Image 1 (cartoon, rainbow, N blue to C red):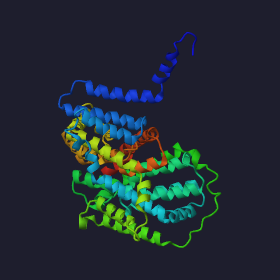
Image 2 (image 1 turned 180 degrees about the horizontal axis):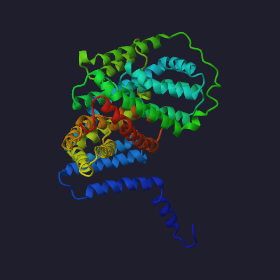
Image 3 (image 1 turned 90 degrees about the vertical axis):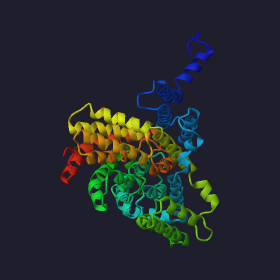
Amino acid sequence: MKSGSPPGAAAFSRAVFNPTAVKFLVAFAVFAAILLMPTPEGLTLQGQRSLAVMTFIVVLWATEVIHTSVAGIIGVVLLVLFGAVPGIGEAVYGFSQPVCYFLIGILTLGLAVHQSGLAERMAIFLMRGAVGSPYLLYLQMLFSFAALTFALPSASTRGAIMVHVYEQVLEQWNIPQGHPFYKATMMAMGALNRLGSTALLAGGITPVVASGLLGDFSWTQWFVIMSVPFYANLIVGGTMLFLFYRAGFRNQGAGDAAPVLPGPIKPAEWRAGAIVMVTALMWFTDFAHGLHPAVPALIALCLILLPRVGILTWGEFERNVGWTNFFVIATSLSLSHALVTSGAAAWFSETLVGGVSQLVSSPMLILLALCVCFALLRMLLPNIAGYLALVIPVTMAAAESLGLNPLVCGFAAVVVGDSAVYYGAGGTSAVFIFQRANISNPEIFRFGITMTVAVIAVLMLLVVPYWNLVGYPLAP
């Protein structure tokens, strides 16, 4: 401290310029700016307040100034305190949604696979196939994101099972959690695994909701349209992660561990495998029974916790299921719901899409500008179903008025919206993996932005010409 400086000056300076304090002040400044500005035309006061709260929480999530679940709960409280929703019932809307209980079900399924020893057996199989090479293991994993979709359509289910398997491999290879190869593996599972699902019409919420909004598509039609963009993004994203964490792939200790031999299959492994197969079969036959995906997941949870039949005790379930994930998803759904019901999301999407379409005249430039808008909207709307329900109708209407193919613009909204994750609360299939791996939100955000740029480039240079070849030109 300089001579003559007041004793409290240095302490005040450290407090003000502390990185945590700066991040929180930035988040609060954004919140206050949106809250106090004159209400724009077409936006309700409730909508303005919802937008302010959601933006505030998104900044907290992205900077990780406080724990993500705490930030989400703060958001729910602010919705009530600032009158963004009619009451507490609307503020805790997310806690009543099936997807939260679907998440708990599939987390329990993954935990059962781990506890039974089945994950270890699968890990031994992977290690043998990789022959001690991190490069081969990584390629195996990227390939499995597409291949396993045909057996386990839900990215969340695949992730919940695979995270335990790859943790076993990395532990056997003595690769600690902070190691670059560990991060590359977990980032791929959290950010790229979902890309395999959306290429299939039966691949979860995204393709089902999107196809319903875009029109009636057969399984084959959807695969023809979406396989090229999503598999191309999987390859590009996998390459970028490799470049981000390439130092970890040169790990020399991976192949030095003593080989592990699988023992005889235990009864618990048979039971875990049977529960996984029955649950997957129920998801694949939803066209016949009409059950929400959360129902088979909860049936699996019940079977896993039943005495004699199951694998886990209630105490093991309570301690290890990862309740943080439940709170993060539930609060993000509540915040997204507030944006939708208050009209803020519709106003924001119409303003962005409508404003951009008036600025440029070239079809490709319009599509490029729309893609930037899609990415901004996706940052604000962590619920993919809510994002699609708002963006696709607005985009298709704007495209038609500008003489563009509405379907192509709608397809682009799906590809951009579902190809990048910007923070840990950005999706059911990602949140629990990032939490387990202790990957920070700034690191996720950095890759999310990089992935967005790559996705838009792939869309413009490869996918749009491909869609033209298969009968969907941008400018008919």
